[in-house]
Length: 422
Image 1 (cartoon, one colour):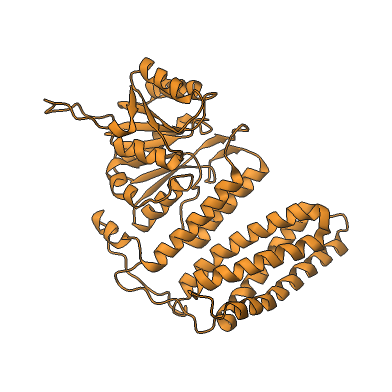
Image 2 (cartoon, rainbow, N blue to C red):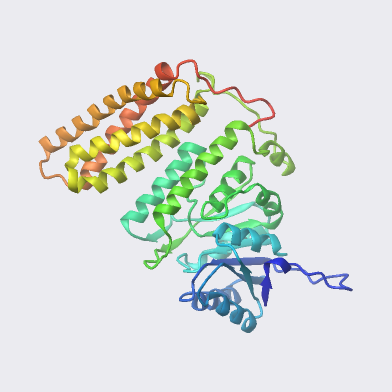
């Protein structure tokens, strides 16, 4: 059947004992997917019919498609009794998932990408711990032991870098935030969804981070995954929005804006206690986490600039320009986010001091390039970038020491109160 977003749960006069909903609702968020939609939904429907031992529903959540996607979705909903079509006027994968999950009466809510890059054999292992209520959320992971993945080097690098950022900046312990194969218990979704702000690709990452901070149990399933070469995802735009989301969460955790303490209590977990690590100076733990996130983002931006300019400016010119641009941005972000310095007062002095530290980084990276070219004159550009990453890692450590002990000396993040969570 086809469902309008404004009429997702119509009331029926005389209904006193409505039929129980399905155990599982698999949402397929789509935007302009006329090419793959019918084939994928029929394949998913057949798999669930043959291999899933509980009542199920498939919800095609169309978010503002402009091609024939909604027509195909409506036809599928007419032909297949367990398929529902949901149509939204605004674009956004996260918006589509929120609408479909919020309207569902299933016990377990899942989603998978329309390209079905993930082997569907992992679907029952994904949702079984949620049906038994052993776990609260479940994710397919392409980075876990036992996973088998086929994809290009660029997407592999981006995926691993993104998950590294999440680990360094947000202390995330789950292994793969981007795999389009996740599930959540409906009762957990009702409490978490109102806290999730993102409506795009960062939606499920934000959901996972909030769940982990609330003390919920996240089950991981290694998957077989084959990259879709025809994917229409704008990688640069998505990565930019993801980094903005990471910074927004960092700010929310630092200020105590999210009620994670209360959420943890609602789920029957022990209250979160703010503790300091023995031997670590006050405020340093949070500063290191925020600095690491900004450092990883700066390094990725630097490598992108270096790769773009390497051909026209040579290795040393590209290295210089990349470092200058990212050094200025790095100092500004650390000033505001890591050390909490607001306003314009002293900003120019801080940038000048940051340029002194930048000089150390330039000396380290340029020296590393000189040493590489002396030892291996014909080194490939990829080898150069690996060496530069190592040199940047060392300069990053020196930068943090200089920021904390010199440039922003005396600027310490305030201790979180008992009612706030860092």
